[in-house]
Image 1 (cartoon, rainbow, N blue to C red):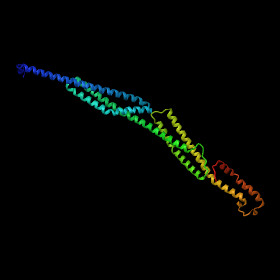
Image 2: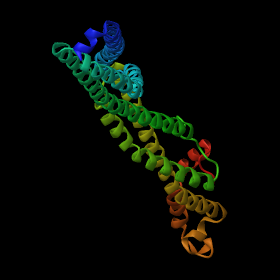
Image 3: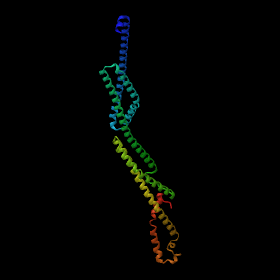
Image 4: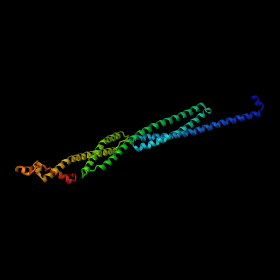
Length: 311
């Protein structure tokens, strides 16, 4: 072969020229491939550094436990998780370009590229594992905040509704039917207030489990507890008063009826048909004795003045 090339110098020169061009093309391609790899490598490294900085900042802010900070950090972490597919695609492209360099790179260069790719892969995996873990922690904390706020909101709404039904002073009614309806209302309110004691206990437990507890939260809990205690006490007091009044109504009705008959004919209440059959001493003692019976009618008159009794 060499002898033929020597015998034909033009062919030799042409062959050398082709070989040189082929080597130059390979070198140019190797340089272009390496430059493309470095561009992707720097791009991937810059993205990972920026994402790592966002994660580190969120991890620091989430330690406070305040709900606004938790919401902000959760939003940032969710954005990072949404970018995971594009980050993985960028990393895969970088890996492909790096592996493409192996045939045209010396042993030392191949080892350097391999280490760079492994470092990128490890950094990306660690970042998203930590991001997912921190996001779950934030969601758990936000869930506790949501539970507390929902419980306190429902309790405030119930307290407002009951306050509208339970006046500061006992409202007096004119008729027996109205009093019975009021009695049922107060019984239902008292039962409802007793049932909502569990909501106070639940709110206190949720307060204890909050990621951050401050004076404002404690004041809110104390206010709701005091309002509930006031409503419970008022409902119980009104119910007791209304039951006591209801118990007095038949007695007062009976006394009023007896008083009416007494005014008509006091001697008929003794069982005698006519006063002529009553001794003179009895005529003197009986009115005085029976008058004492109606002395308690002052209670009836008092209720009439209050407007809370209508026989």
